[in-house]
Length: 121
Image (cartoon, rainbow, N blue to C red; front, side, top):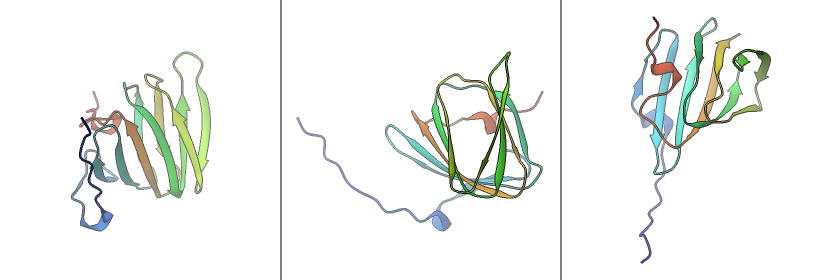
C-alpha cells in the first residue's frame, strides 16, 4: 500500500508565533518525522543546559550564538551566520545569543516541547 503524499508551501510570516521564554519568538512547522523551528533570539537570551530525545540541527541564519555542549567536560562553541551545529539525541547543551540572532532549528522526531519550553527552576 502506498501512502498518499501531498506537498505544502509555508510562509514564515503566516505561521503563528509563540514566546515560551523572554527575549525569544518562535514559529514552527510540524511534519511527520521532523520539525522546523524559526526562532528569533534577542541579544542576551540564554537557555540553561538541557537534553532531549530529538536530534537537532541549529542553523544560524543571522547573528551569533554560543553553545555549551556536554555534561562533565563542557565544550564551548560559537556558531555564526551561515554555520550549523549538529546536536545528537540526549547530548546536554545550553545556548546564549551573543547578538540578536535568527536560527532555523531542525528537530527529529518532532516534539511539542524542546529545551526552550522547559520552565526555569
